[in-house]
View 1 (cartoon, helix red, strand yellow):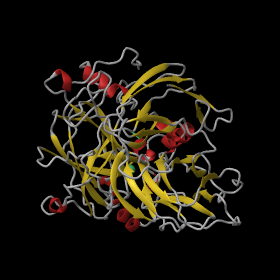
View 2 (cartoon, rainbow, N blue to C red):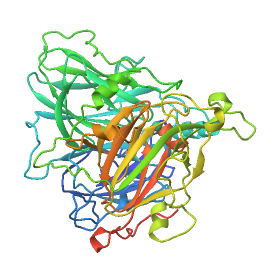
View 3 (cartoon, protein in one colour):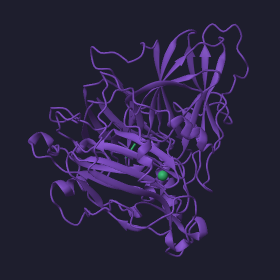
View 4 (cartoon, rainbow, N blue to C red):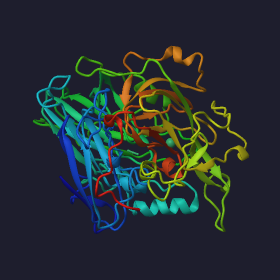
Length: 547
Ligand code: C2O
Ligand code: CU
């Protein structure tokens, strides 16, 4: 398909093929998508596909499950990691093989804050000739949770970089681009979902929000979670979901209530210490056909309190992989590579003449293992592939370089400063990896949604406080852990993830809260080539953009 981006006249939003949010791509599992992207906007951009990049046999593929291993980080889209930005007016062809993922995933720009408006859904139906692991829904409804900005988001990022403080908040959350009628003057801008009574609908939910985790719920109705991030889960019933930026969820909705109108609503879940956050609520309306009377104001759902880490973790801990004959798991049981990353928000002294608007008059920074990531000037994949020296160092630490206490005590100010670097961690092909992601309380705690490109990984354990390498692994779920591409680290806690490094390439790991990412909460994992031709990174495409 052809995809192009252009600026809207109001300069508020970018339009994709003339639409906001961008077009929904539909495919079956096993399909190859070829997307000719044309940048008609006046700034540089790259696109990233939130599919776990796994591969099969043909040349532009991502695969996995051990058999066919040709990999293509060239189409992954992270700016200065996988490719140089696509300059204004230029084109690039993205090639995406949908091999392992099935369900709802999405795509977004991966250039600064451009993803705020440049994003869309990818629906992956079951492979031709196969079906859903649940009764076929009567209808499917895409729901993209997003934000509305009156200002140009690229300028917002620029300003935050200048002042060193928090970026300003969006003007509204949105459901399918519409804020809903709890915001002033937004009656017309309300998403309406018309339903028949007595049916089952499949809601395909994506959070394209920039900086907040959200609770989402529908008044009077139960939600049945059946998938996350393009992997099926054991179905479970819940009153609400907690969805982080980057995540997607497949949810069944049974229209088994009195024929009337009900609000669906989303509001922030924020545990961040002292951080400004937006406690407004975006709404849509679930509207039954054949209503005998229309209520003047529909019932609002009961959302958990905005700071309820309990509600957040209660939901997240219930996620389990479906694990069936058709959808088997591949959880590494013997681990040969143990990694431990601390995830921190830091502070830096303010330089220059202007004072900074971060805490203590300093500027915000953020880090992984106390290294704040510095983006290089040419992409790391190209440097790695062509052996260009001086672009990055391959010595990212496998363990923390400072001993933090993660239990909630804030450190003296002088320990808040991170180091800087463009450092990558190199993994042998096919290593079986366990990575502990430990949230620290160096400055502030948060539910950091950590996203790893190139992999669907398993969430085998989590907890609060400091990870205990003796005791905590005893509680792991190695039987049916959820498989995801983004995981929230519980506030003041840790998660343990496992994966087999069978996708050679250069892959970004980062917090999907945009402000944290722009402060440096990223690192790069390079999975080396295997020995056979089928286990090496593919050669670059001919139209690869130059920096
Ligand atoms: Cu959804 Cu690196 O991104
Ligand atoms: Cu974060």
